[in-house]
Image: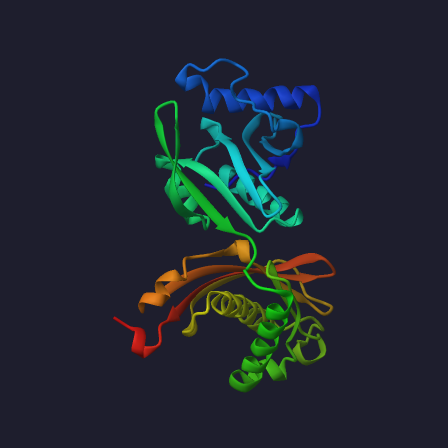
Length: 307
């Protein structure tokens, strides 16, 4: 079930906002364990980034918070969703927005402590288990982490970018005909572009097949970058994909793919196991989203490593 279009994601500003924000925190995370009002807050409130999701009537339906632990790591805390908003994507929306804020702050990793019954939710969004966390109110918690940026130096990123461009030229001739270019890579995001002229249709907008190809190669490229950062090799293939064309592309587009939108553990490739990853790519034109692509990619291990 999808969220209604009139629900809004915002940060609390007014005293009324803050009261409703903390009330939902307490109601979901503290009241069931007979904890007093005020126990839903801690010493990091003033320096943290807070988000809340309100419905069409202005009622707070979900909340979450991000605060910085050190120069490279942030922590997600106080994720809470009202009963009326469960199973609608409210928690995912809050979490993804907090992740985007962490990227904006230049953080490289996020961590959180998840109740056992919430571990599956976070795993579906790219978080990995990293050991036990301290129990709270007698409830077992697990520490979970998610990388926002690939490990590597600026020189590494430049070298991988050059290698990717060369791989495309040598193995995917269509990339040359479309004149696809890597416009940027910083460990957080890979951006690729293509001129409109060689990809135009009779309506003087970008051909849908070219949009699809640009998105496919950008997702493939981000997967390639991850393998480079991990020191892994394998045959990358696109197993399935869905794309939504939202508006015509009438000027040079840019495809953008963030590491935080790449979901799936590549580690088992070391053991000769096939791995999968779901990768989201956005196609932008004049800073507007024109298409959204989600690809299911597979990496096949080298024959010598296969079980």
